[in-house]
Structure formats: structure tokens, C-alpha cells
Amino acid sequence: MRVAIFQMSAPWGSTQVLRVVSLAWLCLFLPLWVVADPSPGIDQEGLVSLTQWPMYRGQPSLSGVSPVKFQGALSEAWVFKAEMGIKSSAAISQGKVFIGCDDGKLHALDLQTGKSLWQFETDGAIESSPLVLGGDVFFGSGDGALYRVRGDNGRLVWKYQTDDQILGSPNWLEDPAGKDPRIIVGSYDFRLHCVSFSEGQALWTYETDNYINGTPAIAKGKTVFGGCDALLHVINLEDGKKVSEIEAGAYIAGSAAMLDDMVYVGHYESEVLCFDLNKSQQVWRYRNRSFPYYSSPAIAGDDVLIGGRDRQVHCLNRFTGEKRWVFSTRGKVDSSPVVLGGEDVVFGSEDGRLYRVSLAEGKEIQVIDVGQPLTGSPAVVQGWLVIGDEDGHVYGFKDIVKNPSVQQP
Image 1 (cartoon, rainbow, N blue to C red):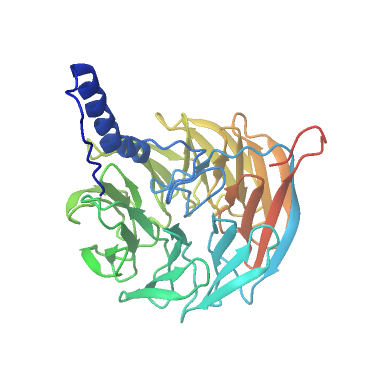
Image 2: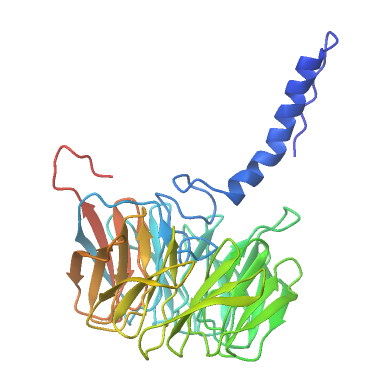
């Protein structure tokens, strides 16, 4: 940190001193405000904005919300074909698309054209969705490793090895000491791993009783995740110690989403649950039909939305669990919905269709048939939506404004 030294030619009055103290106070604490309550339209490291979708569900709390608003209809602008199917969800940053593939490769594509920029190959399928932080890309692989590669050329920075496959996506948090960010990821070795950003060294691990499938959600100094042990784990991020364990009643295949002190998650026994972390207890449960939930929730205002294997997306009151609306598709909805600008909801289905519906009523706005199952989740930036299918296609859909008087983003 640089310290400016001022030479005073004359004594200062109380007004000048007050101004200097106030300025120093702002310099120290304004960055903390920005991190704690970021403006969604301004680019900040690892956080969703109009021009970046840097990780699974957009930001560490996994809320699945973007400030982007589409002005027209989505139209296919490009298609990239990988060698095998894609279950990974894309990350978008600095005009690049990053997405994993079952062929064991992480693909970097140009957002405007869909052309391949580089590939990085691992020894296992990559279902993990990438995290872009500090210009580099972090992702897990079926070979059990967490990788950090350069965002501009795909060169390996470091590789952190766990004892089993990594299917969920990495998350991140700032170091409490303000030195080095931390990367958090779950593995099928039953452990949650906290790894240093710079060196890829383990800082701590937390052991559970079964596989960790999803991405750990992060907010307020805690991380929350579930797994095949049917527990919701709440962990202190500073030291990796258990805060609490909450019975979920069935194994959790997807990821939880956090807002304030509330956590929302679906599980295999056909229920969506809301937990209060302060009380370490369940607030409500929602059950519609006997089909499991593999999708991760989105939280927007008073609503929580989640896809189900009952071929539907459910919109619930997030305080009571009361059903607001249900939108039906022709296939399972493992794809996690993304809420756009508080107005639209976009998601894929195993019926091979990309859906766009209104948040207010769940009414259909647009449907695009790609012909192959969509189990990954949309990645959205201003003017663009990117999603991959299980036949290995990555689609770039552009927001096309038909009214020539309205400028496209």
C-alpha cells in the first residue's frame, strides 16, 4: 500500500483535518461496501454484471440472477461442435466463453463468433462449470483434479489433486486477511477443499460422510452445500470448521442458493426446502409430485424458482413455499433457471428446447428447439445467451431487436 506524505506549509484548521480524516475513512471502507453490496451493472472480479457471467449461477451465493434484460427475440448466431456431450454450464468473461466437455477438454470460444480460441485437455470428463477470477479459469475434472489455467491462452498455472472426481463447480471468497483469494470445491472423496488462489495449496479440508455433488454456496463468511449424506452442511470459511448440520431427508444432487440467512435447495425425494441458518432449522418444504430435483434454485425478489424431473419449473414464494406458478415442458428440467432483470426466466429442458418465460406469470415468451437435451444452465451477458447440449453443441443466441429505432446492446 502506498502512503502519501504531505508537507504542510501552514497549520491546518479543524475543517481541513476533518476532510482528510473523512477521505482516509472512505478509502479504507468504500471497497468493503462494494464487495458486500455490488452494483450488478458494474464489472467486479468474480461477480455477475451486464458484461460477465463469471461462474456457475453468476456469483458466490449461487442466486442465479443477472441484471441483463433482453430487448428482442433470441436468434442463433453461431454453433460450436465439440467431440462429445456437454453437461457443463458456460462462464463468460472478457468476450470469451469457457465451457467443459465430456471429452475431457475445457473449451475457450470467442463470444461474438463461437470460434475456438484454445483447448485444455484433462484425463476425465469436465461436468464442472468454470470459474473466471483474476483473468484465469478454475474448473474441476473427472480425473479428480482442480485446475487453474490462463484465460488468454489456456496454459496450466497449477493443478490441485483430490482423491476422486470433481463434478461440481468451484466457488471463491476473499481471504479474510485481504491477501490471497480462496477457491472452494467439493469432491467425490467426501471432502470440501479450500485452496489458495496463487499457489493451489490446500488451506483446509472438511470431511463429510458421502459424495459432494454440487457447488458450495458462499455468503456472510459461511459456505453451504449438500451431498449424498442427506445433510445440509454449514461451514465457517475462515477455518473450515463446522457451524451446523441440518437434516435434509434425502440426498442432494444439485446446489443450494443463499440470500440473507436463508438457504434454498431441492433434493432427490421430490421436495424443495428452505432453511434458516440462524436457527439451523427448516422453515418450509414444498412437494408437488414424486419426482426428484437436480436443478439449482434461482432467487429473485420474493420468488424462488427451480426445475424438476417432473418436467416443470416451479415458482414459489420464498418466504412461505407457496406455489405461485408452474411452467410445463416435455422433458426433465435439470437445467437451473436464470432470472433476467427481474422480468424473464430462461432455462433448458431434456426435451431439447430452450425456454424463456415471464417471471410475473410464468407465461411463454419464446421457445427455441435445438433438438438435443439441454441439462446445462444458461450463461447470460448483455445481448447474448450461451448454452451447451448433450450432443456436444455450444449455442450462442443473440438478442435481436426488430425495431430499428432501438439500438442493440
